[in-house]
Amino acid sequence: YAEALAAAEKSKKESQGPVYNADLTDSLRMMWFVNKAKADAEELPNLEDEHFTTDVPDSVLIARLAAMNSFISLPFNENVRNYIILYTERNRAKTARILGLSKYYMPIFEETLDRYGLPKELKIMAIIESALDPVATSRAGARGLWQFMYRTGLNYGLTINTFVDERLDVEKSSDAAARYLQSSYKLFGDWILAIASYNCGSGNVNKAIRRAGGRRDFWSIYPYLPRETRGYVPAFVG
Image (cartoon, rainbow, N blue to C red; front, side):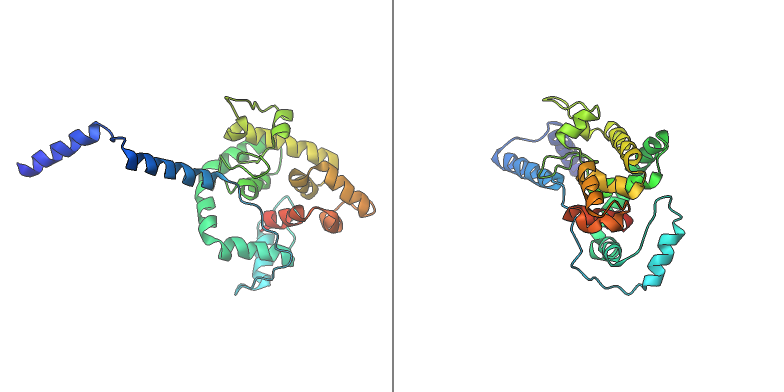
């Protein structure tokens, strides 16, 4: 009887909801700061000057890349190798979280890309952009899974105002990203360059092409791209 009485009293208290005292207010404030910190987009690390080591032979990594049978070229070099090690060994906790979120977001990305007839491998770009955090915000003001800047989002038909920010809408932002990549591919005729332009803009890619004497492959224009973009494609492959 005593146990039943205690359970009933507990149920009554829970049904009444929390009592908003100073301690609870402080904890809610702390929770807001924690969630805000989680929403800040992480910058892509540039691993040009790194030399990570692994027990996995290069021949195994090369074989695994080849076995993917990707429509988009997946080259292997020192920079790519660093990003493979970063995702698989150096940052396992983050990668585990991304793999969990992928089960929800990747089918949405694949359906959107398929609607525009684009390679499904492009879905991986959202991992580089936001680590699949739908409310990620960069220091430059880019937001959402696909990290659209304010003006670019408006140019691709996303509503952004005081009440609505469609950069945070999974389906609408994915559709805008697909249209951006479709336009970039029409401009450059190369998926790797289209991927690079998503990071730094088509103007910077064109400038790099001119400085590379008109050559139009990523590794030829690599030295002339912004530093972050030089890591963007190797991160995509990784």
